[in-house]
Length: 232
Image: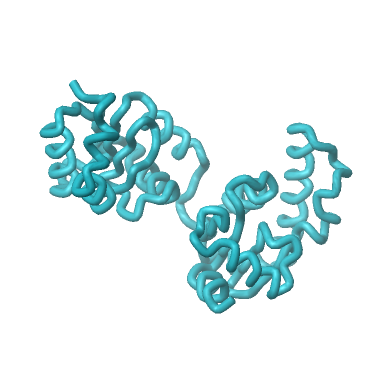
């Protein structure tokens, strides 16, 4: 429970979710549309996610996800409770889910008008624009077997590119500092889980990580095995 409270207090807005939960996705999207960039913790991807879920239940979260914290304070699933949760009244189709999402959006906007939570949300507002940049990054990452997002002035990026060339792989390289939308792409890479946005290495369309992760794979011998299908 202490870990949950600590994570919940590190950002102005924090959401505990599960990657397979459609309602969690809807809540995250609503926060993004409000201009907020909440910290997201996917319980099904955390090594101690089961314990964190029990801790959330102990705090009163029912359902346990999505669990929303604003300003370090637990708001539980108040948005869902206010709309009688997703109990089937909207149906199960994609169109019904969109209608329900619109309903949630109205509820949040009403709360913003009343000033109950909007001040805290605005403290974590960023230049986040839309998920189009994440789509752009993932689209570019899938254009070739091995893709590296880099900066032309980054020495670590240069080292990683040389490593791949020495292994016999010719990666597709995107220098984001030479792209007009490079700043937004860098933010998208961070949201995808890159601890350091560059170099960001994708193999087979999947994010492998940055310098530390790539070097660890190389030292263990795993990197060469992964790159075999993409050698010249």
